[in-house]
Length: 403
Ligand SMILES: Nc1ncnc2c1ncn2[C@@H]1O[C@H](COP(=O)(O)OP(=O)(O)O)[C@@H](O)[C@H]1O
Ligand SMILES: [Mg+2]
Image 1 (cartoon, rainbow, N blue to C red):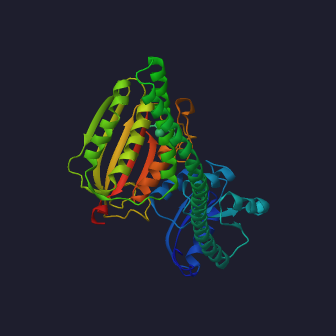
Image 2 (tube, rainbow, N blue to C red):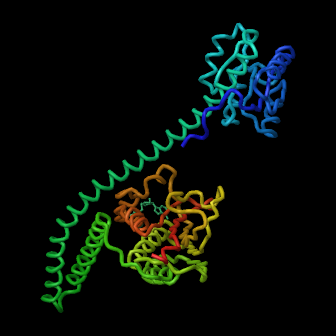
Image 3 (cartoon, rainbow, N blue to C red):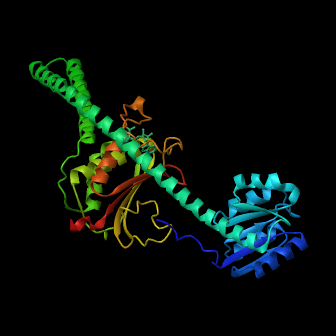
């Protein structure tokens, strides 16, 4: 976990001196050359712009900084350097009358401060090494803090899902039985009244449709709450997309939606539970149809991708689950709809989060899809496209084929 062990005082340093007072600068330079520490790189400049140029060109461990320069004054100098180069340790070189100010600088990202004329070569050397060590600890602390935050968020989410799951399955069972009774009654009336008045028949048909819808929601809830056994077989994702599309063609035609497909026929087969993945695809397709609206456009893409592990290459994937060298099979479902407001992006996978109350949305589609994708060792993302609309992406490890 530790980056490296504590730096010994003899570790060669790469030091940048930023000081506009010539005497002070010479003094620092000569102290650094006489001190016992080997300085492997030493550059000097008298302006902030000069410092930025050198920091861009060379790699330094530490900057000895006078904050009052011809082109930048006071704390601003420090803040600009420490925010632009967070990896570099900074030791402030202040005038004697600025003693209190020196202390202040620590809260602006400096690791230490020295008061001009009050230190020896030995003290300077020690201060630089201490500052470097402090910077290293600071980096580790930040990393550890980020890890803790991430774990805490995951735990909270798991806890939330557990409670919702337990509640949901209880309620679902309570609702399913009366629904079955109502459905039985409607079917019975339909038979008894046949042939009867059209209005009665239409009312019964509406009731039957409402029951089916409620039953669908209850099944979603039960799916969401349980971890069902998967029935995994080798499947062709492209064929499954075509099948899912055909199941919702009614919705697509009703809204005059144009569908574009770029399905790579060379993607490997994947080992999946076809019913479950069909459910994911339909959820995503329906969301896209609802977002795109009348006359909208949908686009489906499939492709496979070998993860290189290079920074920026599918770097949104969890490194614990997806390793470099692995091939993934990806399906993107894009729409040219409204997109997702920034403050909703982190909530769309929460159970019962919906912005479609008025259209009968329940907010389970994405949370169910997420749990299905995770049970397949895959993952799911939603983002806004830069050209407008949203992109849902599901990713499968292709080595699932060898399971
Ligand atoms: N393609 C999309 N475009 C815009 N918003 C979306 C899209 N997909 C999902 N959302 C947002 O995520 C919410 C949750 O989606 P979902 O879990 O499928 O539930 P529901 O569709 O029942 O609302 C939606 O209400 C919507 O606000
Ligand atoms: Mg939905």
